[in-house]
Image (cartoon, rainbow, N blue to C red; front, side, top):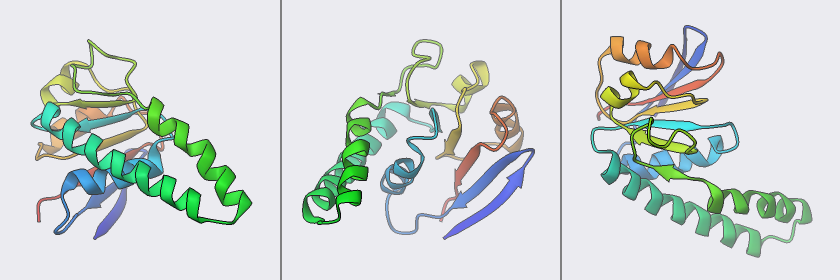
Length: 153
């Protein structure tokens, strides 16, 4: 289930992944946002979440490769061919934002992001945080960016 809204110039999407793991839903959603710019993911355990999302990310890549090899539509083949290199060049990190500011996908705790706000077009919140913390972190995001909040089910 997905709910959407707007908060101070940003788009907000509340997601409820149901029975699937957050990492699986996040990887699928990340696929739709990978060309929009940098991504930040707020989580309580950055290293653990990075490993889980990367595993799911590889599953998405395999699905795209299968789709490309099974289609006869030349336009679709070309589109998927251009997307595949981005899968391999996307840089994931669980280092603190100050240590790895050029990463494409940054996993960190809310405390790390409050100390060093993410410069991203997409922010995923995969753990409970206070509304004040969310507003402080998102205040640095450019207008019309997307904030995806995973709600506990």
